[in-house]
Length: 359
Image (cartoon, rainbow, N blue to C red; front, top):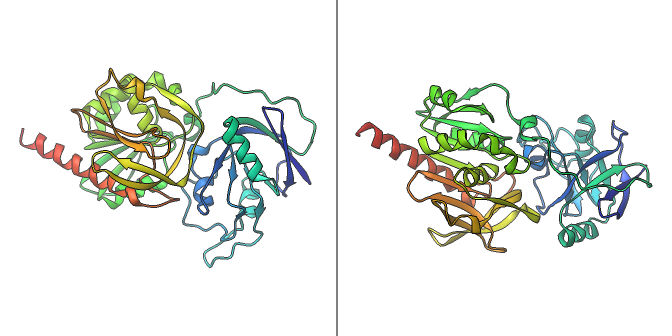
């Protein structure tokens, strides 16, 4: 049947609404992803909660869905928008076609949309709210403030421990990707994943050697109620922040965040490490960034910058063992150029541990 994506600016994009198990209208924020591959990881990344994903590559789904490349147990996107979707997954590990997988989870898929025109619209006017419907005539889509705390919809409810390594890392779950956990396990860590609202006292009882603040969806300013707790934790343990976790570190020390027009989503974003002067190609997925002008009265310094638009891509504290990155060093999808961030973090954890031992 015909499907219609109506944007809050009043424009409508028409396509074919593929067979799904849901017939209700779906609302969400429209964003675009520029990677040629990695759609399975994108669909299951909790950071995309309640968003329509426009895939810019014209053919999506040609290698299907396998049992290995999930970043969480289920897809989190509100809907998928493509030009053409392959009906068959041509890969020996594929267990579903993309369409079969989306149908299983009642995720709407609209194909044969002029994705080039849609992406140009988003680039010119910014991300916006939309309704996906089988009916052409719909009421005007209104911009909606993000009142609901989306993080609580994707965070775990109980602490869970993985691995038996010699360093214990607490991973705050704001909507973490499985690949972050896997990278920490590769570094011979024991990792305890804890709910987003875990208290300082509960963290203390776990006796971690270090803390990681994960990625996640939504506006970081929604987490203001948790800043005092996070600051105490960050000031007590070596800390690495990733994506939303990076933004929360900025907020905890007094910086501010702002929303980009259409964000950074893809697997080819160049970032320069100002400490080493080296450029990495990175995987990214975010709408918000730390505002550089708000750093003046904090003890945070810029360590990473986006080569294209000069936005902040990472911070370091001038005296504490705290580093944050806006990009995804675990990749999946994308290049692993910045994977050294995990090794660097564990080196810091070990050094702080030795200092405590001989203090």
